[in-house]
Image (cartoon, rainbow, N blue to C red; front, side, top):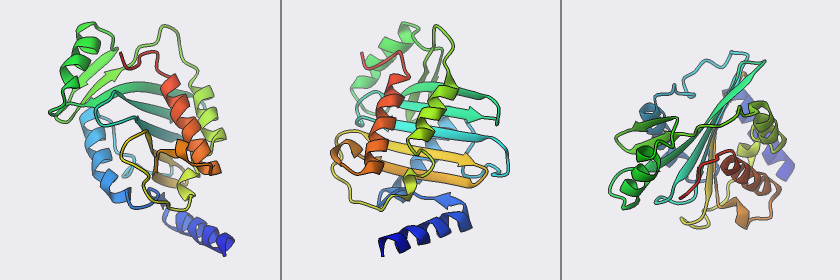
Length: 208
């Protein structure tokens, strides 16, 4: 029975070219992704053409609403992989906003900074070039393209660390969410937890 369910899911993905979030949180994050990409000034992956030879992966690691958060973007043209690491935070009615802006903006710790309506962004500078191909290989080795096929499971808690992934390749558009995967012994959750830790390790700047 379990194999049959997995097969049906695979057929659905192949037929529509799109994988949604795991479980109930799916639709609630669609608006977040749209607003985030608009304020950051990057194109939507949902409406991008899927016939291109390249691919793009976007990863959000969110420790908590009132903490510094991580966003990684990897773009492959089929030959070369480029990337960015961006620290971001909600800038509305949170006591940490002034502290973050002082710590990162006033001290010129960002390669580029953006103040949006809802989010602040800090492009992380690197003293030497980053091997983005190595990062993409790590994510692919931990099933970044197939994690969204996991069986839905309920939220564990609103606290902790969550993983949000949006990606597009020639096969279609993928969008999925993991809530506190570190608290599970499932293989897919273990991969999600590894992706979280690796994503945070890509940034030389962290929570002050």
